[in-house]
Length: 593
Image (cartoon, rainbow, N blue to C red; front, side, top):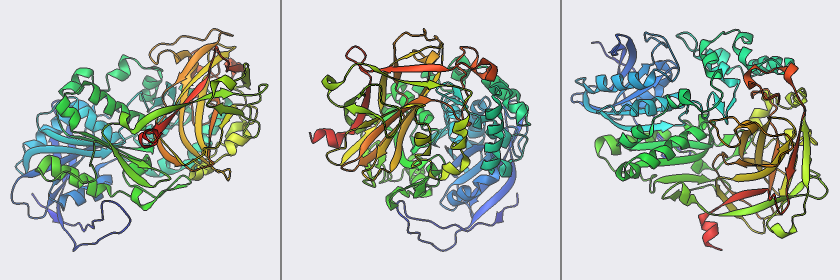
């Protein structure tokens, strides 16, 4: 076996911006290592080892659909810090054999790869897994099979199929076809995938033409049986369940786990669902070894934190060196080294505005109390940022009545502001809120009398009546500073037919007032300065980046413009129907009261 000495690495501090560059470190490399699977298919690995390795060491494994060479930098880093690292193309991708079937293949293939690696003479039998996004999913998929030699995982921003991709809140994302095109064939379609403007134009063509979601793959020039299979399962069912660990599999997981996600990570719902399910079903010792980190990051930032994210700027403490944190994690769990100092408690979360990390014993312990703010308005005046309703703490002052908006699914004007250029400042952009005046409902709280930390999960109970069988709702919660600037804190969506269960459709009875509970908001943590207010925006889902519900009560993915029905939405707020927003106050705030 011929090894090439090729890599030079630099290390950095665990937190902050200063980088210390040591003497160059070298790693040995072997391309084309074959990993046999139980059905005769072979996966191909790029294998990285410490230079001159003389004794067996712990091994790290990553399974990627993005071709193994994409993990070169991380693999070389770990190899120069005492680990053997195998970057492996998943079945049907890169240089591996077989056919790629997203999500369905990784459990057994991961098991086989772990056990093969553990048997190699350069491995001491202890195998850890590493990686983000789909690579995070492969860790959970492998762990659910309980390979005997899997000793540690660190899933970062792990996607959970059916929960946050290719659909969220039982609504499909056109992004799914962009991703499927990225991973079509054996090589990465990187240039096409990265052309955001190109994809936005293609999505808008279908949006303006009111084309059904089910034809998206053909319209984009990439007919996909996988996409059609996904679309055939529009809500939570046994198909999606089969791609996730069962309660029994969670119960058998007895290994250290480090879950990492971000407040603006599109896969935060999946990451926290894995975390909660494991803690709900695993043994007490296993739960005690599951750590959670929630930073002020978007999806990409969970792997490579940046200070600036879509219009927001965070302090230097947000710049956690992920290579260092992971290295310390594996040193602890695979080499019996010291516990990472950063993980002083089971949960670490970043408080924006305060620009500091805080630590808690559990996710639930972060929130100390909920402040209830009741939705109210005068004479139905709640249709815009400058003619809004109120969020009031005293239920006795809530006057009876309702607020109303009408949504015409044939209205495509939202695409004019729903453009790719907005992504650079998406979290602070108010153009959509201002442009949709009259097309949604807006409520503002009174200014906060003092600095207030909001940490945890919002919830909204809204009493709503619609005059069609179905429609989609989007809710956004924003912090509005005294100068009028805005920051998106969290959001949620709900399809009316799934208001009672994500697993079974029950259509609305036109005109009937029913409770709609929005309890799928993402985690947020931010200090709102004195004089700041909360803004809640409730309206339709009408975006070129989301599946459109034409409100007919049919199969949404098959609906088109010919099925469109305008819906009138009435939101009630009176003593019998007290619509309310539940605001999570940090425990430090609650304890001070």
